[in-house]
Length: 239
Image 1 (tube, helix red, strand yellow):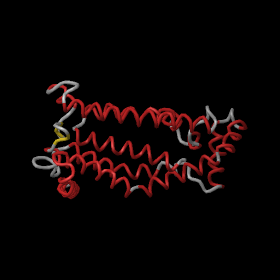
Image 2: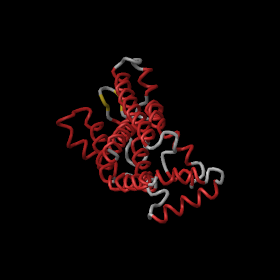
Image 3: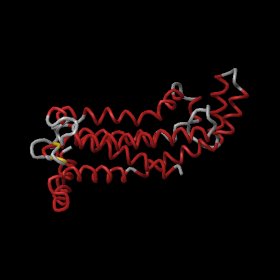
Image 4: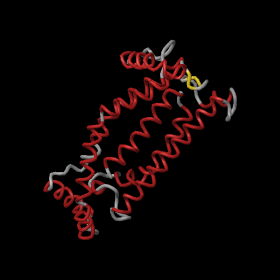
């Protein structure tokens, strides 16, 4: 953990002439973007898997009609279809799951005083008078909603809301293009509970609003940067 903290500190030192007191905040944003760039190949692999499954949707729709009254036969038929075309049902999900340990590590780095990030670390710095180690409740208690620290959070909420709305509309549009009522993924019929998860996914970005409101500002910057990166990345990879 201290290795990541040292990297953020060194980056903040380099950015000091440009961002002055907000150098640590800028370092968190750039460091998060750099890590997302490193794991981008996994995102590309996930996109390839999703495109491969999407290409099979017409055949999956036919199987759904053919075996509408026999769910077990439907699952077997879809598995056989995947095997025939060498498409794994979760080929688009596994790369994303492999990224989770990295993202969890970064979130812990920017939300905990352990691992070398407390004291004189990034959490001791500020972003426009808002302490990176503080929370929205602290900003409300010291200056109110429209105080200097409160305005920083309002900007973050606006960014998160815009990204979440963009992701929601794009996901709904993609679902409509793939058949409207059909599940987003062809794997829904082969993995129990995945259909319900797919229906909730368009709303998941809005949960970031709650996260930003309760975690330290440093972690909020990481979450907002990562969420915005994900939205742009998906738009580019699935255009």
